[in-house]
Amino acid sequence: MLAQRANLIRSSGTATARAAAKAAAEAGKEVIDLTAGEIWSNLAPGIRDGAIEAINRGINRYTDTIGVMELREALARKISLDTGQTWKAEEVAVTSGAKQALFNAAMVLLNPGDEVIIPAPYWTTFPAQVLIAGGTPVFVDTRHNGYVPRVADIKAAVTDRTRAIVINTPNNPTGAVYDVPTLLGVADFAVNRNLWIIFDECYGDFVHGHHTHHPITSIIPEVRSRTLIVNGFSKSLALTGWRIGYIAGLKEVINAVNAFQSHTTSNPNVIAQHAVLAHLQCGDGGYQSRLRSQLASARQIGLNVLSSLKRVRVPKAAGGFYFYLDLSHLLQPATGIGGLTTTDDIVDSLLSDAGVAAVSGTTFGDPTGLRLSYGIPPEKLRIGLSRLVEVLNGWE
Ligand code: PLP
Image 1 (cartoon, helix red, strand yellow):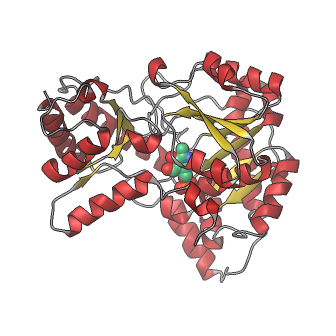
Image 2 (cartoon, rainbow, N blue to C red; image 1 turned 90 degrees about the vertical axis):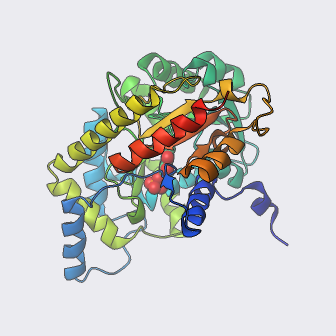
């Protein structure tokens, strides 16, 4: 009945986990939902005022396909500050969330059969979009290196068909923040082998402890012409529903994105564009620093609770707002206690026995992991993680 393409992909695993949590809550269960890829927060004042002003000014028409010029200029200034390089508006396209930026990148860069290297565990949309574009995802396991890819492993995965490498730092789901030698090695290799780098830095504002986020184009300037920077405001401004992201790269690529987007969604929502523009023009950074301290404190609360885990290592949680647990010690070998042997089973059991919703690592190509979001109110987080620790510690 459906096209072959429709059989290539399934609905995102994180969405399915969210739906299971919602269904349990609707069935009357008291559920603490640690599945969300978003932060609980009020709206940034600049966003609210910018949106209201745009509505009051009667702004309601199509904009240029890849966004109003003032917003592209403001984004170019932001990227210039982020990277320490000069970026121009013609090198930036505004998209309906970073997800569309990534989709555009896949559609304008990949030919059928092209391979794209994706470090695993991975955010589930990366391989799905590569498949939709006719490409082949090739995974590089990072689990034995603290969830940071070894450059040697990336090199070993490259073939004549390799076209691009996806670099997502800080990483969803693992929270890993890639260090300079790794980025340097990948960038250098991409330049030498003429590979594209799709650099997703959506969580770049959230790094913890001594970690620093490094935009890859700042590491080796030569890699800039091979890099597409993908970012957005869903995470950094807790603005998931407003759907504003962007992609930055060579003018020729942005022109192709413009043509492609003109036949798919056209411009991102006009009010949301003006809201983000107002924020970029008038925001004093106060909202972001409040968001960062909210997350830093949630992370600390979470790590304190998780430190009581007996057979699971406390996660590093270097970036983003996820705790990523390695459950491999709990999974081997089948203990016979209830026959629970996979992370999917553990997730089911956490939901039914403890009312805690989490995302299984299988969603991210890792049968041993578990992702817990800490972007929720602190009291709920404390209760949810305490229940989780109790369940996991009972797993003998
Ligand atoms: N990239 C990563 C790594 C993500 O985790 C997400 C959302 O979860 C996105 C991109 C997409 O964000 P959005 O489309 O909401 O901007």
